[in-house]
Length: 81
Image 1 (cartoon, rainbow, N blue to C red):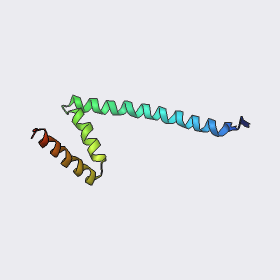
Image 2: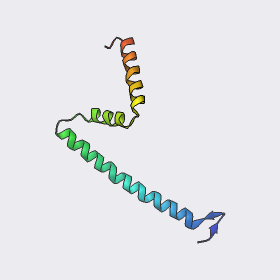
Image 3: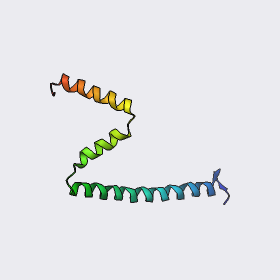
Image 4: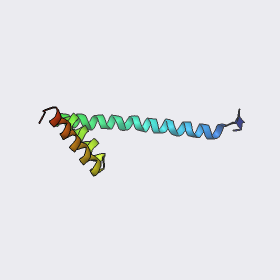
């Protein structure tokens, strides 16, 4: 295809199609994740806690330690400990 109004049609179409495929894959993965969480919940695990653990595992250990220390400081300030 030729340029239309200064836009490379082939290139644009390629990007759009790639994005559409990735969106479909993302939707399928979201369904798979829901299924795994549902299965875990069905066996007695707390899904909210599991999600938090996953967030913590993604963090750098020093960032995680810093956050945990700050949470402890805030808890003490609010007399929660």
